[in-house]
Length: 330
Ligand SMILES: NC(=O)c1ccc[n+]([C@@H]2O[C@H](COP(=O)([O-])OP(=O)(O)OC[C@H]3O[C@@H](n4cnc5c(N)ncnc54)[C@H](OP(=O)(O)O)[C@@H]3O)[C@@H](O)[C@H]2O)c1
Image 1 (cartoon, rainbow, N blue to C red):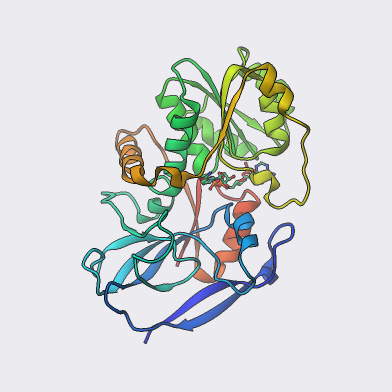
Image 2: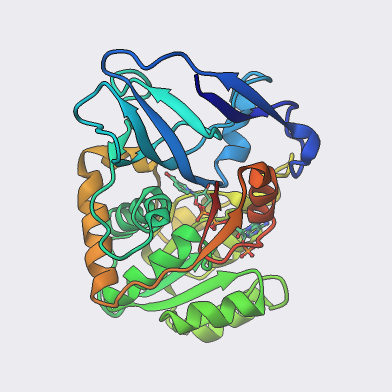
């Protein structure tokens, strides 16, 4: 008999989450049946999307999210005992999974061989954030050599990868992040310029860093930063709208009407969900893995120890405490 621990969405989020939004519970799991397997979490992900997405779920739901887990019991040959899998099992230590049930956009899968790289990368550079960067930047921004690219949320899981891919494609890359330490770090991994949005005059610094204007903007944050970057976009510029983390903990709109820039500069802006490329999932992982091996992609992770610290890690990430991908080690 296996008893799982799980984190419950105990109270509706308003503003930044606090301890009272979460409750730790135990659940006795049913036996593993035909086609099912039992997975034991090793690393769990905390991601910005959890903050807005949970609002759609009833109070009392298990917190949603991806994890890297080990198969410890199985009645499904595709998920043998000992395999490491990625599954969107939520904030839980143990899960009985029937891979034929659940969201078809994000089925569980056995992780490809990461060689010497840590399994936690299955939640970061070699998982959903890596594919978000790979597809969301390349497919939507279509960067060309010599162009100028701006990335907001630049020291985070997705942004730090986008900036490096932009360098691989021969672009000049400007990152916007929330501390001097983060700005220093992204420059060590190849960004040409970094702007600390908390202390700098973003508009003035961006004009200096991008004297010929901005061709591509990968937007992780929305809000005021985006309004400023959009003001410096070139004609026929491309904006990939990945997320609006600056707004997730707010309850009001904070920016002015953007339509004028869109019309006068003939900008193209496209939003996306990474699940659009589910069919090409392994392509993204394999390309990013190749770039890691070639030394062209560098990663950093912020690892919080202990399943009991899931809420702490989640709030810390929302407040910008993470460099690169934020994960929790059980
Ligand atoms: N469309 C998709 O399919 C998809 C998939 C994955 C992620 N996303 C989106 O991509 C974005 C980045 O996700 P991630 O997983 O890479 O998270 P992350 O960047 O690793 O972590 C969140 C970061 O947001 C920044 N932040 C928090 N409040 C902010 C504010 N008011 N203004 C500017 N920055 C703020 C913090 O960095 P600072 O210290 O720099 O403030 C924090 O470290 C999010 O918007 C997320 O929702 C979208």
